[in-house]
Image (cartoon, rainbow, N blue to C red; front, side, top):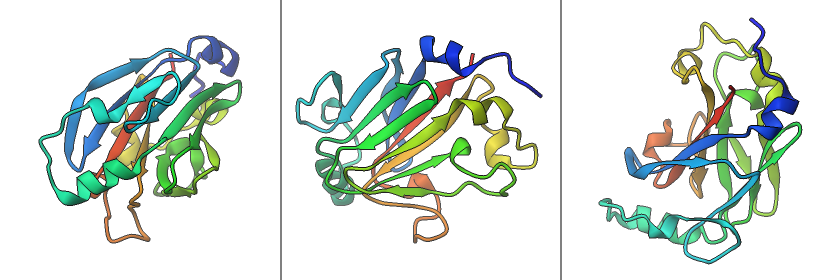
Length: 180
């Protein structure tokens, strides 16, 4: 099934939404983004961006507070002609899971560790156009209008970690890229 969008049309109509989670609880509302670049940071005024420290959370666990404090400069989402890149501006690693990062024939999606100062193409337009995973429960749960990318700060999850699910991570983002 071929989609009706092209990378060039997406470049000019980039739209995503994101939300912050503390473990299983969403903090705040779903935020909409239409800029070509967005900084997401904790409490440091770092460019044109979104300050996660402004969001109040009912989760007062020490682990959540510790991880939130380590976000620092956070991440930068940048739209490029070939996809959306995530640059880790923090002093700690981030972890990313995206359907467009993996081999289309793999059975499950991998979690990718991104060290401080490095970037990764978290959303690939070409792969999104051709991606179909009818047997992947995770993929079939994705919204039809977009593709979800999950980003955890400081703590990883998945096969190589004690946390098997992102909802066990202290602080994470869900970013949904619109493909229409």
